[in-house]
Length: 184
Image (cartoon, rainbow, N blue to C red):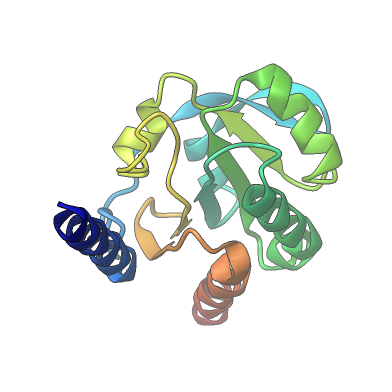
């Protein structure tokens, strides 16, 4: 019996390890139409309605989904995007983060972790997450960590999925830079 339990536990560990090594992918591929949305958002603790269509009139949009405000990885990612926001703006790009958090939580997060540099939107009913296939499979009440770059024509030009926050800014910056170089 002990041997069977040990083998079962080992099989479960191998299964989980194998699942973690499966490369993640975003459902919206390059060239796909980005679903339009409006959402209550916060920038510097001030609530407004974010409109993807309106933002795209200004240039590309970096839309990133994150699991939850004030968690370690999401705080790292928010700090990274805050540090890079001016460079994104120089290329005409808007950054917007989206999570399931309510607007009161995001008011605080937008000031402390986003450093009042970019907006974060509340998706408490998960309509945006579902439209962008950004629901975390293992915990469907929160978003997966997915970053998209959307061109002004409303098409996805880049997507990146990784629960590790480290490369999201670097990768989206490269995609925006490439777009900017070919359009200016």
